[in-house]
Image (cartoon, rainbow, N blue to C red; front, side, top):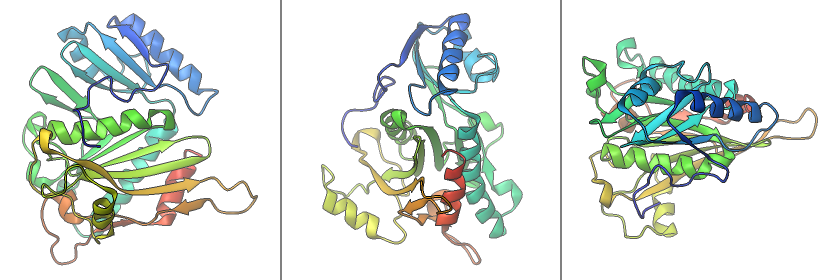
Length: 300
């Protein structure tokens, strides 16, 4: 995934909506998308917003009911914005379930409650010119601040969407790494179609990696256990992003038979998530087949 820097228009599926930033119009378009997904499991979930004013930006970032009950995620650059409509409640639940697997593991290690901080769809701003929010994100204690608006970037980001959004989700992964200068260590992408749910783990290659990345080198990285991403910052122009692991859960159409799971388990290195080496009684987070099956069942 090295190459030109991602833009708000990169990777959008066919049929994405373009709208000017009148709230009445945005509410209408968001409702149309929700109605589409009442009868379909795939399709467009994106609205490109033109002519943003500072007032509309503030409304869309702070008022969770700005689109009259439609759940969404918002990012913007200058006067152009991008809204991801959350098409079904199950998408939010799947994100929450994935979050809880990690959360429960960290609690089982005895980490104090105040150190296990998920910040949900918090907006991360780069001045007044741009901002972005995830479906969920994890903020290690080393990046906690008061007030929370001044906190650093998360170490882990989760983005969820339908399979037609995969191209855009991957661009969003690149954007998290680029905007944070590599402070985001891992991005998890969850994307679902009618019969398959995929979980992708994206991270940066080491600064010493060959340019461009080749499959042999990526395979070498992926064979490491654990495969730890770079733990220092990288400027966006030097970053090379790759998929370090993928787990697929496919619906089994044979009555009484379990879903087919390929690629589990997935390992999330403690040092990448917590921003420090593991101490006594602490370990890397391992997400196994049963956890993936339970999460995927929400979407299949």
